[in-house]
Image (cartoon, rainbow, N blue to C red; front, top):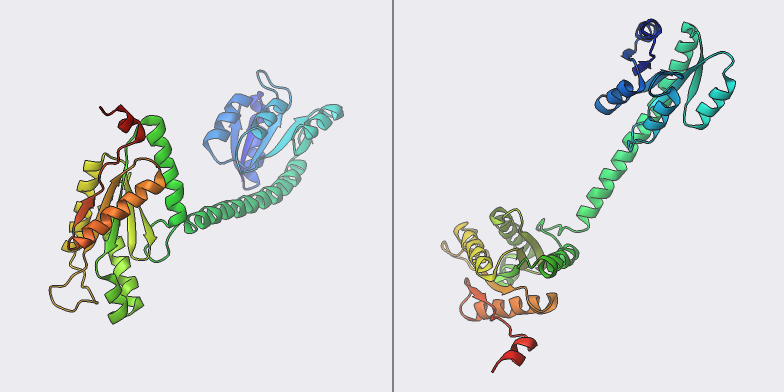
Length: 318
């Protein structure tokens, strides 16, 4: 174990440090409470053996500082007291001290206390590792609950949560954003001719291209079926440019279209773009309308939703 030995008397400090080292532990001498705290903050520590009466910071105050730390690792604290100092010993235990040693400290007593400390710190270490594992599991579960298992993109729950955040930043900080709704062209023919497994693989490959093309601030989701939604924090012109870049990237990836046989038939996307206006539902509806327009005009193209005129704007018109 790593054991801090705190005493303002250099002789006592040296004797205790040598005793700790002789028992197979690493002694970390400190001349006062402040130095001990610096060690605690910068290095892994298992045990502190501290004198009670020291200038500047008493051993009890040192213990209270250590117990006040927001740390998952537990530090076993031993307080060294005088023979007739039973009241101080009780006060120390009540304040968070784990054990007390009586001056002068006998090597046998120190060895015995360190054996107990090792058992206790090992138990706390295993509990801390289990807690960290549970916390990691909870984080992983939360992420999995918001991820589409087929494409690896965010699912509808994640999309709803993120859109609320984008909308809040738009209203509070006037940060514009837009959405691009993508649809794989002739996707039904993939399922009809090649089967649903081929359709799943087509979705996975298209999603992988979209992920590669996103900037750090952009977000992508599986909107439903073969439709994929990308949210981009930018004005509508930049959103449209980014959406068309993604569309071309999918086409240039030359992913074979299993539902339309032919050496030159590859997967393509149609995309509808809309600026964030009105509310979330109307923005998504506008993107869907623009997507329908792109598909009706021949597919493998982009269409931008017409800007909607608000009621205050109509009232202000001559």
